[in-house]
Image (tube, rainbow, N blue to C red):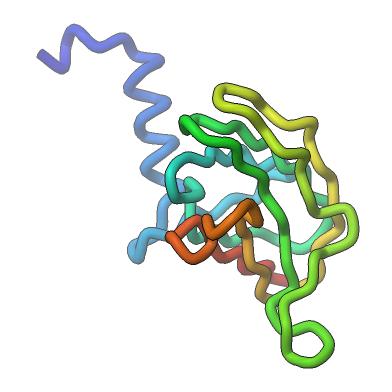
Amino acid sequence: MLRLLPTAALAALALALSACGDDGEFKTDRPILRLSLDEYRIVPQTIVVKQGRMKFVVRNTGRLTHNLVVQIPEGPEGKPVDLPGGRTDTMQPGETAPPIKVTLLPGEYRLVCTIANHDDLGQYGSLEVEP
């Protein structure tokens, strides 16, 4: 049955699997992150990238409205704060938001949907930025 799969499909599968770490992390050196949001998750959920300029392309694959916000987990007063420029527009089902572009410094960031209680329902992720 594997003989029937086109070579391109096998190459794409190998590339996708090679990007995942042993513990479910998605690691990439590319300056573009493509994320999907649905009820109630962000895919991929755990991401590791190199510092620098990053473009986020986010698609709502769910049935409800969603957005994506990149947050600094421990801002002033110990509360998360939105990274300047790190917020997509609210997306209707099936929509892709205009890309957001941010410069990431080394550290930990949080990815979250800020609509209603989506964060409490599990729609969040982590972004580790390595030097």
